[in-house]
Image (cartoon, rainbow over all chains, first blue to last red; front, top):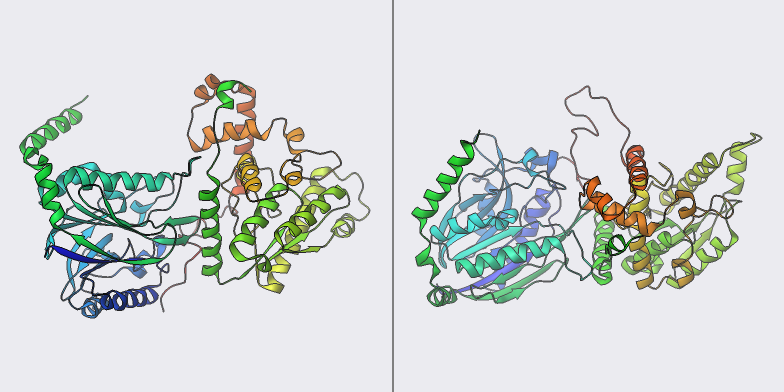
Length: 286
Length: 282
C-alpha cells in the first residue's frame, strides 16, 4: 500500500490504572475507525503511564494477554502500536512497543537503551531488549523504537541494513532544560534524532510523545511525522492531549532514496570489521 | 562581580516557562481532584509569582491567599500583599499570627530570632493546612530553588506544601517571570526579606547577592562545574566554600525523615511509588 492513513493519539495515560487505560485505548480505536485510519499509534507505556516503579509487576502483561487480543479485535482491519510493560516468560519486565494487527500482537520491540541517569531510573525496573525487531506491514518493512532508542545513531544503521522504510517511535519524554530562546533540551534532542533518522536513512518517521504530568515531570507531546526529505507532514500541539489524522505517501521513501542513494554505500562488512577491531583494542588495553 | 561571571545567563523564555508551569499546575489539580488553591501571600515576590501563576492556571476565583503578618512584620508587607491580591483578583484573608506566637512563648525571655522565625513559619503552615482541610484547597508552596538549595527556609514551615511550582526557579528567574506576568514593580523590585525583624534583608543576612549566588548555583548544581573551574571564572574561594557548606548542611530539609531499614520494603528507601499512584489493582 502506497498510502497510509495514520491516526495519532497524543494522550496522557492514567498512572498504574490498566482498566482506565484500556478504556482510553478503546475510545481512541472507535475514533480512529470512524476516521477510516489504517494505523493508530499511542505513546510509550500508553497502557500503564511512565513512573511505574514499584507497580511494575502489577501492571505487566504477557503478549498473549486477552485484553490485547480484544483491542486488536476492536481495531479490525486497522493496525495499532501501543506501549506496554511486557512480562516475559522468564519473569523479566520490558518497556515494550507492541504492533497489533489482525489477531493480537504481531510484533514486539523491547526498549534497547534504558536511560538510567539524573531523573531516569529505568534499569532499576526494566530489563533491556537485546534484539532489533523489524516486521512486514502493508506499508513496507517497519521498525519501532522507544523514546531514548531514537537518540542512538547506531540503531539507525541497523534499521537501514534491515531494510526498514517506516519507523514508528513512541515516547514519554519529559520537558527539561528551557533556554532563554524558548528552546527545550528534551524536545531538541528528539527533533534532532527524528530528522537524522528520516533524512540520512531515508525513512518515513512517526514520533508520538505523551502529555500529562507525573510527579514533577511534565511530558511535552509535540508528536510529529517527518518524511525522508525532512518535511514535517503533520505536527501535534505541545503539552495538550490531541488526536490527528495524517495522510502519508510511502512513495516519498522511494523518491528520496533515488535522489539520495547513499544506501548503496553503506558497506556493512567494513562497519562490522572496524567495530570488531575497535572493540578488540578497547578490551585488550592494559 | 567580574565580567565572566556577569555574563552567565540564567534567563528563561517567559512564555515557554509560564506555559509549562501552567500545564503542570492544571495537570496536578486534575489528577489530585482539586479545584481550589490556598497559599501564604507575604507581599514578597515569590508568593506574588505563585498568585499570578495560579490565577492564570485555575482562574482567580479558585485561589485564596492568606496574609499572616507577625508583630515584627513591616506594615508595608501587608499593603503589598493586598496589592498583589487585587492585581490578580484573588481573595485575600488577613489572619495575623502575633497572638499565636506570643501565647506560645508565654513569659519566656530572650528568645532568639531563629526560634521566633521558625515558630512564625510553622504557625503559618498550620493555618494553611487547616484552610486546606476546611475548604478542600491544595496548599501551594512558593520556595524558590535558591532558597531550597541554601536551606533558607523552615522545615515543615514555609517549606511544607503539596506542590511547589517555583521550586526549580532561581530567585533571579522568579524576578523575571514575576515582572513578565505583571506583578507590580514595587513588589518585584523591593529588597527580598524574610520579614523577621525590622530592616532585615535576605542579601544583608546571607552576605551575598542573589545575582551572584544564582550564577554560582547554576554552574555548581545544574552544570556540574568543578571547584577549580569556578575559581578560574572568578568566584572567590571563600564564597564557594560558604555556599557548598550551606547546601550540604541543609540536605535534611530537602528529604523526608530518615527511617532505619528492617524489612524488605521500607518507606523512603525502596517503597518506590509515584505520588500519582492509584493503588494496587483489586
